[in-house]
View 1 (cartoon, rainbow, N blue to C red):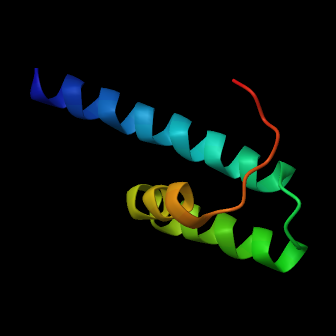
View 2 (cartoon, one colour):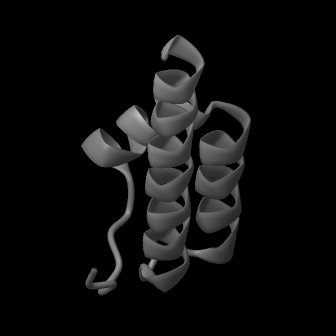
View 3 (cartoon, rainbow, N blue to C red):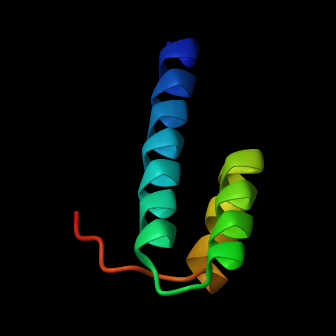
Length: 63
């Protein structure tokens, strides 16, 4: 039960990270800023996602 729950949480975090990266790509930020945001999200999946949600650039991606 525990490993199934952990796997589900991992998939949710992965999906949110992909969604955040797509939003960064679609944003109007400069290329250098986009690269830094994407690296932050990839290298620190949970913390990077939280920081992006608070201060990151937003695009026009609709889910």
